[in-house]
Length: 240
Image 1 (tube, one colour):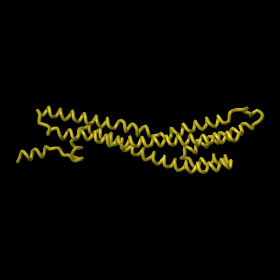
Image 2 (spheres, rainbow, N blue to C red):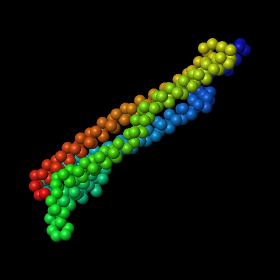
Image 3 (cartoon, rainbow, N blue to C red):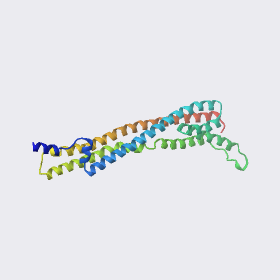
Image 4 (cartoon, rainbow, N blue to C red):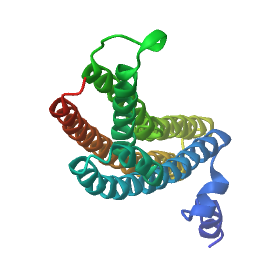
């Protein structure tokens, strides 16, 4: 009976609090790093979801207005409407192009010492929209590198904690003179927790990165399509 009680007292506790208490410093540091990665990645994922949702909503609204502006040749209004659609990358791309177009028309009409001479207005508009598109694409990709880093490194951080934990368990087994598998079962189970946590952190991060990356690509396609429509409008105007 005393032997059974002694074994029960020495048996590892497989509750979360019990395993945390029995973990070494390195294993605890690994779990803390993984938890911090999960928190930061979750915040970034939520922030990106809000940004993309708002960008999509405002882009649809701006495109609907843009059709009327172009049909009625309300070019100044198309530029002014960008301020009410500041979250839309499409609005910023089109607004920069239309603003460049209007400034180019004024420059071509200047005479005297301020005369800039002939230049390719279509090319100027296209280059301006390309610059804006690159900048907006970079803004849309903010935070995705962090999410991708979490998805790629979390499993290895967890594996590192597992390997170190197993090494410590077998070192303890050798120091005890060999007490059988039961003497290291608790240590191994605690070590494997690091791998499990690493996978739990990495899998949602990889899924979020792939989803958001596809949304950025979708915004890029939309920006190219609308920019092409603006270039077609400028070409049809024939005032350059």
